[in-house]
Amino acid sequence: MKIRIAIWACAGALVVLSMSLCFIAFRGMIQQESALWPIVYVICPISLFRHHAMSMYFVLLVNTATYAVAGLIFEGARGHLAAHAA
Image (tube, rainbow, N blue to C red):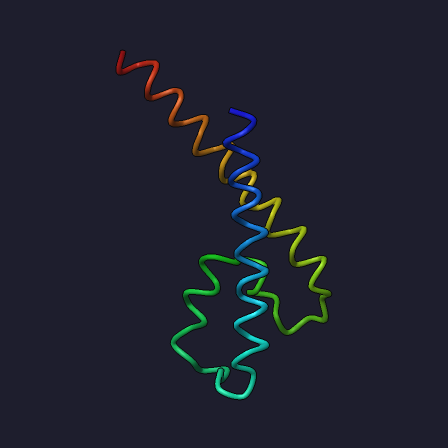
């Protein structure tokens, strides 16, 4: 289970890094009212606070921790349901 939670955490870090690259590449094209923002809010919840000054490292750390906690909850529920199904 530890490896699966680490995979969840790595996925959270990968989301931040890929979104950062996209925002750098398309800097002038992405607007505040874009249809992209609801998707960003779902996959990177810390982006809800985008009006506050945050470093990319802080966002990376928080999103990695968020995905690790989500993975812990998901894997715990999955294990619990698998134990009851057997």
